[in-house]
Length: 88
View 1 (cartoon, rainbow, N blue to C red):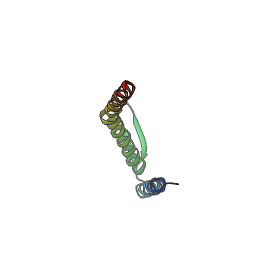
View 2 (cartoon, rainbow, N blue to C red; view 1 turned 180 degrees about the vertical axis):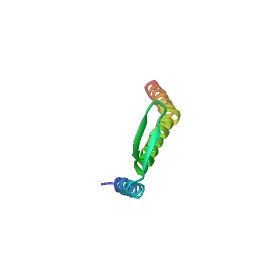
View 3 (spheres, one colour; view 1 turned 90 degrees about the vertical axis):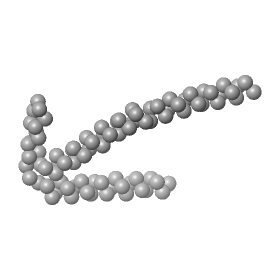
View 4 (cartoon, rainbow, N blue to C red; view 1 turned 135 degrees about the horizontal axis):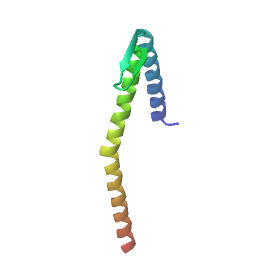
């Protein structure tokens, strides 16, 4: 088992624990107005959902803006390398 897997497991556990603490400490009721509807929730849950949404949107933007072009460039480079190998 790789050490990186253990680090990821510890990080995930720490995030779950911190999320539970934030939720437990912020039990006030709030109403989120989304423009087309309102959602009654606790402040802690609202904060956690906003953070999760931010992570998802940020990850998607990163994947579209950075990862996808890098994959295309890698595929082109691999095809170019195969073509030069076949010439030999």
